Length: 200
Image (cartoon, rainbow, N blue to C red; front, side, top):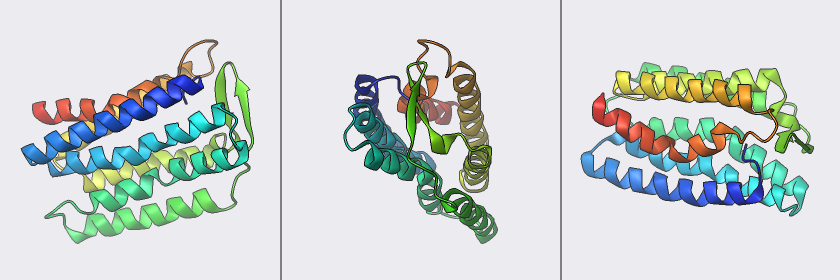
């Protein structure tokens, strides 16, 4: 994700500050879904802390496992938070819970190795090489946004923004000396979501 220890640490600290600030603004404006997204995004950003630990070579196996846990649990954490959206019919919650349960089965069995290598200046996690896990991650992410996040136009705009950035990041990620766009975009996504919420 981030391309060195400093970038990971700065992303972690900045991401937490941005998410908390957006969460506070969202609560004041009574944008419930945005507030839940912002506070859930703190979990998403927490992976940068474990990446920082990997870069610093602090118990790399433990740090790699924790990075996997924080990455894998992003979908269930966001699902649990978005389930708190008021006035949501039970059917979308039920469908989303089945999708998240299937997602967890895919991500947990079998457990991947903790191997990490540095390729082209980037951390390359063995567990992020599985196409099945990557597809499950994106199906889970798209599903919980479309099923649980309201208003609908804002939900679609958020998920499209995330998908575009993921594709761009994937295309550029293994280029020499190109920082992962995801590292920086993840930090400011709650702010982008706030801007989208104001205009949609």
